[in-house]
Length: 438
Image (tube, rainbow, N blue to C red; front, top):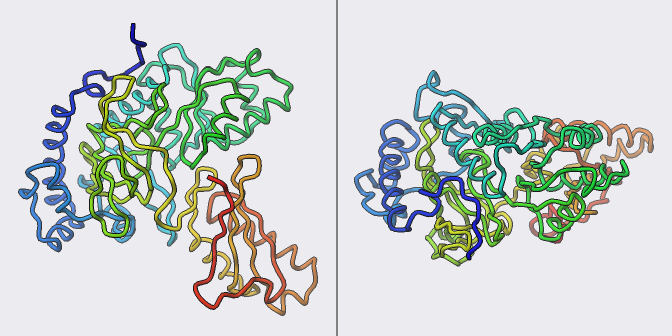
């Protein structure tokens, strides 16, 4: 007898591909009409590309339409991309950007219902159900992680503990005393929790009730998965999401662990050649692109995520027929993901250049000791600063470290080098040295 895998919405998640594609086309046509008639950004993009909503007669016709990129959202900050008036927006989230302007996304009441639905699918994929106690250590606030997992927990009827991040020892106490069975967190913070469990002298098999964990928001390796599973005695599931599309809930692994199932009735995926923009077939690595099919407040057409992955369309062992995406292989741009936070070199440069005592020469190092991302910035001192002695340099390092933390929302080390201490290049300067072995 075949093993029965948990599925939240069998009608959709196991729907025959031809029926699903009919549903996708209908919703895509509605989305194209919506953005063209309600969002000036898209009217301008469509007119510039010489296309009209009526040109979308099949899913393949989507390739005729223009891409949306993050800069489009920044250029229309804050509410320009919204397709409904602000009075119809129930909730707003945002992510930080390279220029100091946030990328803003909005949700109507119906958008929130759909977000809860796709998050329920995430939880169900790992066997989470009513009666589970969910320890939600994703950040709450404008970041979509915490709230996304929170509303999904309500949708499936589980008990959620909104602990957010930080106060790690207290979190261990809560997991033990409250009987948490499900952990949601970034993979790097899961390892921090594992270290705290060990420092407290606890045996996760005997002293904790954790059974499953959902981890995402940053790249993580299979080696890190093994560490998390071993040290916290749970089964780890990879999840994917981005605020512009909805937040967490875009895709999740099933118990077969052979890719992340995309909620294709709400988010239509493409893979393109990152250089030419041409669509690529299934099973071919490239850049991931999404079109939202049901978003009311913030619909996006062909949004370039800059994430590199691959799509697989064959039916999964779990019975789901929706497309699966592979683990994210990296980025097509220069964005770094440090402990779940998006960090751009230009943000770091802006902070460094705000200090007149520093030279404009710097290098950003990214390491992963003990599977934890660590960011370090090396920058040159001016002659005047360097000649004032080590105490002054130490004080400046502290000031720069504080400035970077405030700008990036993630801590990093700072080393101020002597003048000419950073190697020069005759060509393009090397600004980022990523020494993580992904």
